[in-house]
Amino acid sequence: MMDEVCSFCKKEKKQVKKLFQAEDAFICDQCVKKFRDTLASFDESTPGIPKQPKLPDVSNN
Ligand SMILES: [Zn+2]
Image 1 (tube, helix red, strand yellow):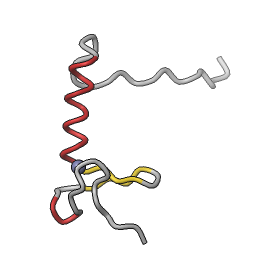
Image 2 (cartoon, rainbow, N blue to C red):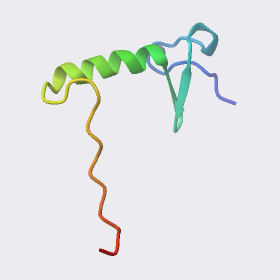
Image 3 (cartoon, rainbow, N blue to C red):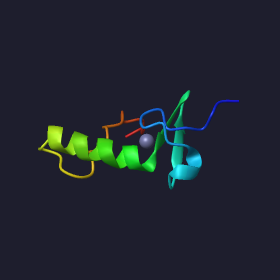
Image 4 (cartoon, rainbow, N blue to C red):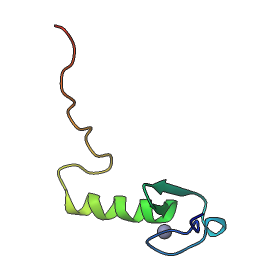
């Protein structure tokens, strides 16, 4: 079994509020917040919440 530590800041699960698993890596709530802030600063056209990717239209209309 894998150690449940953040793959980015190496904090253990008990050291953070929440640890998310993604494939074979983990990311903690603090890093999620950090990356979200970083992404927001890179893309000034979409501050805050990123746009939802446009999904293919699968309806029969
Ligand atoms: Zn982290």
